[in-house]
Image (cartoon, rainbow, N blue to C red):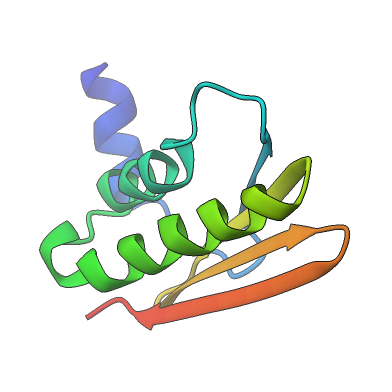
Length: 101
């Protein structure tokens, strides 16, 4: 617990670090796109209050894609300057970004 937190606070952010979430439209966890983003905010010590628009946009895009597709793949990437989210399905790709603030 505490050792991990101390180490994680000093870990450098790498532009190559990407977290991927795959979600089926049949899943009962349709709020996971927003929850995944909230977890990354906590890990990277980003104030979630300044990211409300990003979180809402990610959730809305995921909901719209899952209405038409069977599954979605979401890549989350946090850099020193920005938060990037790429939502992909077979027929569509949506990119959403915001400065870390």
